[in-house]
Image 1 (cartoon, rainbow, N blue to C red):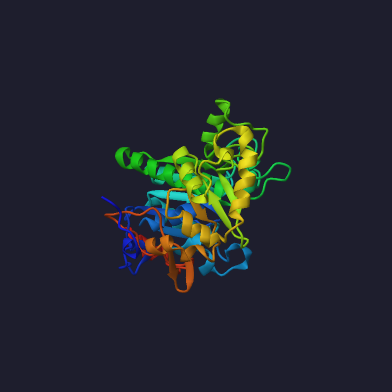
Image 2 (image 1 turned 90 degrees about the horizontal axis):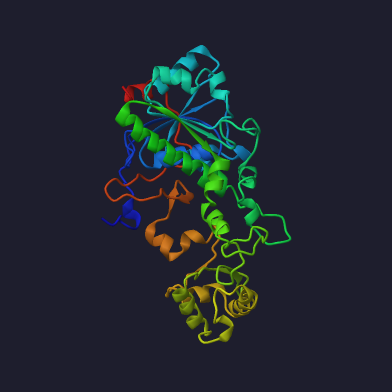
Length: 386
């Protein structure tokens, strides 16, 4: 069955309670230790898919950069209980929540949960089927396990960062997408859900050690294969097929200062591109993959794309299989007709944000809240989970 497209793919009848959201994970009970970055992103994805996620925050905990909680969109679609975990009564409340959960997710340095007497050994005695999801930069062991870091440093030791950017310049920070989110939060989601399947069938919980440096390395599995095959030169930054060395797989500036992204790797798509650029039969493009042809082809493509504005190229090339798209900013991306048709972005109380992904035909997700879905109480959660 094809998932429905457009605004109707969201379930518009949201439950009044954050523990009554719709989606394929409806009913999955998750306790989240409020933190930063990939662990909240993972919990956001679980909540987007209908899981009953409850955040435990410490008193006075606030988002980074001084922004209001409603703008901290990683925290969307779930409510918060505020507990001082060093106070006996609040610690007991946290334990009561964890005892009734299927999943616990935390993103602290190794040993923090143990020092709070909330580690996996203590909690799995109370709840043997508990899946204990642990999100760290360096993993639960290894010589760097106790060191501080962020997305940029985690990907730095994986081979990812070295491969990004042009030769002769420092690697640019590719935002916090590769290690934090792709190699971190999404790995945690897949690991936790796999462990939940195991726990539901066996009654046995386990620890999921999601490490951002591991996950970032896994994102490079294709490149390590190409290197082993002699098809990737690790000494050439910006000189390989997927990182700028191929004329047919890179971005080009347009007449108005915009950019287009070009990616016709396959010969049939490259031929379509050449046809619509008026270059069919040009001997300069006769051997698409020849290493010594990349420089001249790149120079000619750069010249051609500078002859028209970005949107003019969009009108010409988006209608055919040329594998070309305009490079859009956060301001302009929500207005692209494809994103509009699929309701890729949604407005929540005046805050524009990406909607849940992926999409489900039989169990569509609710629309998300913004980052402040409000407070709840331990008693209210326990009553719902009784």
